[in-house]
Image (cartoon, rainbow, N blue to C red; front, side):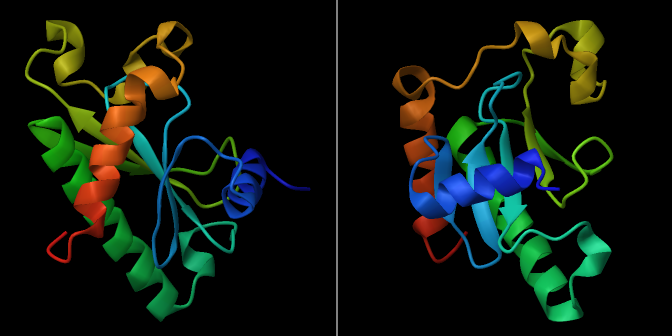
Length: 147
C-alpha cells in the first residue's frame, strides 16, 4: 500500500509538489508541510524504499551524503546554530529523513528538546508566499558544488 512518502515522491516526479527544493542524486529535498522550525525539510528517496537498510551500500551512502548536503544548505540559508537529523519511518513505513534547523531564539523549554516536543498542529503550513524565498535559497546553496 502506498504511503504518504510514495504519494509525495510521485507528485515531485510529476512536477506538482510545491514544496520541492531540489532533485538530488538519491531523491527529493522538500520543505516540510508544517514549518514548526523555519526551514524544516525532508529528504525522500527516489525510488521509495521501506527503510535505510533496504538500500544497497552505494545507494545508502548516496542518500546519507545527500542528507548531509541538505543539512549544510539549510544551515547556510537559515543561519541556524545546528541541524538535527531524524530517520524513523514508524508512522509512514517508507524511508524519509527529517532535517530540523535549530535556533538560539527557540523557547527555553524547547531549545534543547527534540522537535516533536513542539505543538505541530499549531505550526504554520508551508506557504509559497512566505517560505518560497527560503525554499529557493536552500535550492541555491544545494546547486553550489561546495555544498
